[in-house]
Image 1 (spheres, rainbow, N blue to C red):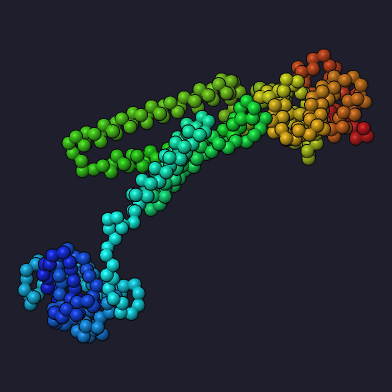
Image 2 (image 1 turned 180 degrees about the horizontal axis):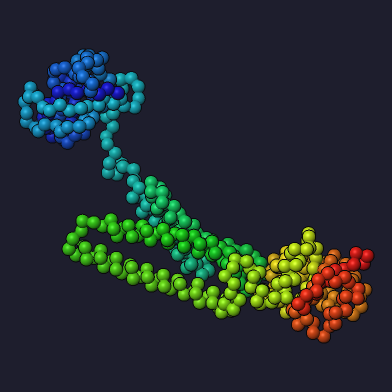
Length: 443
């Protein structure tokens, strides 16, 4: 590529432009057309100079001899072409011109193909966007028509698809594209749960319950990030509307005030559940500890269990089985299973409802089902049966090493003599109304 500074003269033509060397018509074909607003530019006879000074080059000789390759284009860099109707000999201000080789090799003839416009033009991105929107809406309407309760799927799918399309359109703006992608993914998860769900124990009455729980958690987290970033882009959109006056200015200000009011209302509404919900879920903050340790609340709620759990975590190694009280009604969302939960030691039966719902296929086996339903009765027998051999046999059957007797066990089995275990088991802990027994190794 060469940079030359010829002396230029200009003449206005109508409808086409050409760059010529001298006055020979044959030499006019040696340079490609330059679109510069109905102006014909001619190189007058004179000295060609490079950008660094006077220097006769091979390009000068090619221009004089008319042997410049056809795949060269003249492009103005700086300066302004002179106005029309000047004589050919009149000099105009100098103009930098870059001779840029075009694609291809050899002296190829100029491209004479007609320009692609009108019905021959390829659809641009605006056309593709319109087509994509039509397709998305068509799929959403089809899903709404053929799917049971398909309104949620149609709305979520439409938003997700449009968000994905906008993310692709804004790839040049990575922050905006990433924000739209997160929002599209969130609504995609919502739409997905409308057609795909995990078949669990609730499949009969509440088929999508656990699927909605698990995927909506992720969707809400993604939407919270998306909304936070989107507020910035919305605010910037209001600020970018500069240079407006009159009714447009008032309209912009009114939009800002309206949006700010709606945003404030949404923020206040969103603050209701974190305050009221946490107040209800924590039983009015009765066991408030201001600690990230989930066990600390037991210091005030049940100090005896707290001390025993701390002792087990400090003195028991490995994963030996421990027996604790069992609620015949299931005990879900209660204090049953607390020892196993806070120590990590396995027990014979936890919350029955949860144990059941994650073993639906396992319970299809008759042997497994019999073992599952027998465990509750065996736990009750361990605490209530007065025969030591029966108690030790049941403990050995489940390979249980420890037996826990605390306030909850005494409440669950009020008629049983829970002190009798000391006659055939070893007492390893006894404090604050809690006793922990260990099965003798010889048994």
